[in-house]
Length: 127
Image (cartoon, rainbow, N blue to C red; front, side, top):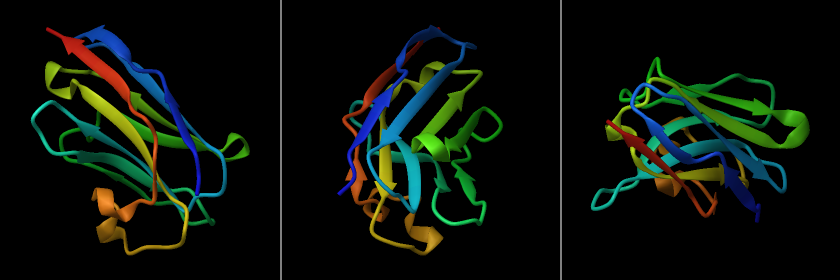
């Protein structure tokens, strides 16, 4: 099991930016970011392959062109750079990792594709 620690949430005005960070305690095959707003289901925001040499990134349509997921292999960290934030981006953001093996990519946009979760960091965007 891998422990995940998130940081970087906060409150910003619409149009602003935030960068979320997630540190993993061990090896991961994929890592991603999900978000959950009150009364809504947890939804995938972005994920990427963190193990091996193949580059693979995915973004939900709602964040394409605004959010960027990246990694620092040396530090076992994944980042989510969020630009042009809107009030609709307000949610608890969770870091997730798949630490047990390779998975078909169609599973990675869903929570069940991951084995480890962080505690979450709140992002609030005001209009």
